[in-house]
Image (cartoon, rainbow, N blue to C red; front, side, top):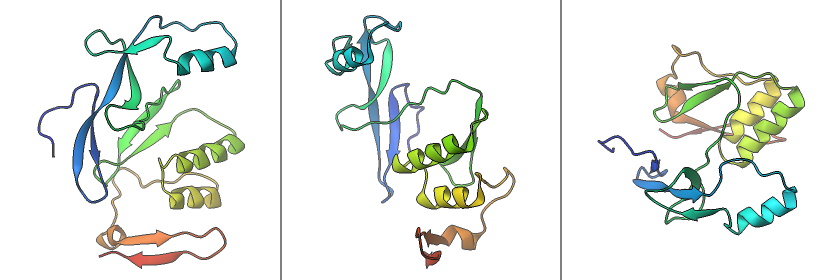
Length: 166
C-alpha cells in the first residue's frame, strides 16, 4: 500500500488481481468559472473543443475526471444536498447516504444508472428493487467469514445461485 498521503489530484487504483497504481486526474485552467447563459447545443460544441480551458499544472484552477496518461475517467460527483459517507466492513468500500427525498421512479433510474456506470454491483440493484429500498448493514454489524467467501449470481428471470470462492 501507499505510505504517504496522496496529493489532491492523485488516486490509488487497485485492480482485481491486487496490483495497484497511483495515477492523476487532469488539472486545467479555465478562463471563467461562472455559468454562461447560452443555448445548450453551443455549450456542448464549445466545451468539447476545449475553447474555455487548457491543461495546466501549477496555474490550474479546476480538477477534472480525466485520467492523466491512461484515458477514461475517475468520476467526480458534485453533490448539491446533504449526504454522509460511511466506510463499510470491506476495506476501501463504503456507503453513501444521500439525505434528500426522491420519488420511487427517480430512485429506480438512479439505481440502474449506478449499475450501468459500474458504481454498484448488479445484485445490490436487483435486491434493492425487489425489496423496494436500499438496505445495508448497520455500522456495528459485520459479515461472517462464510459470507465473505460466497459470491452470488443473479438472473433477471432465474433463481439466485451461490458460488463458493473460498
